[in-house]
Image (cartoon, rainbow, N blue to C red):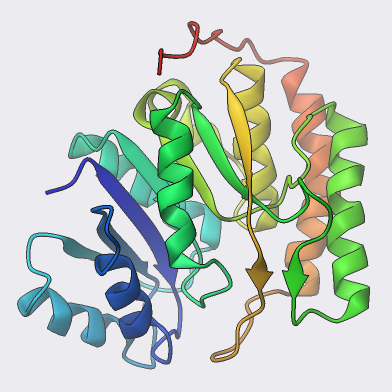
Length: 250
């Protein structure tokens, strides 16, 4: 058993899930994996369970939920699961290879070297996105600028979904008080960690849009993020944040 676990929410990812599991399990740095599947009708969970019963017993786990309950609630479920099992480093990433599994080691290194939150960032060194239409690149980039302007958050890639947390961050944040389910969830988690005073480091990555499976992006998710940013900022005026102690030494 590793002290590091990667949480993967899934809904209809049969084209990608086995390849992703094998890619993560084959890394030189040891990671366990938790798949949180929202009742995928395409058999995603069955593939994972077959791998659990076979070569990845003790390192690969699955939590199955009934119905499509949202990205944010999947991660919150996974965070609680990981905390209950005493993992020290908890990572989140997409199932579709838009996040390169080899970059997990770099996020882990940032945490081990003293960061509390390590973000796989598309925008910390410019714009590093592959296979997105220009319109979506511009929308995503300026969405982060919008979040920075409204909230004061200094993170450049505020909607990033490739993130590592030290255990103490997830223990400090009131996870059950995190409101949003879509991309606003990613913003709310980073903003809350920042307000608690945790050390956030952005690690540059190259983001590559999925080549297999279907994107889960929708107008509703985008609208939630736009309106949610204002709600997150307003909520902060009435919230007391326990300040984190100085980051652990290297």
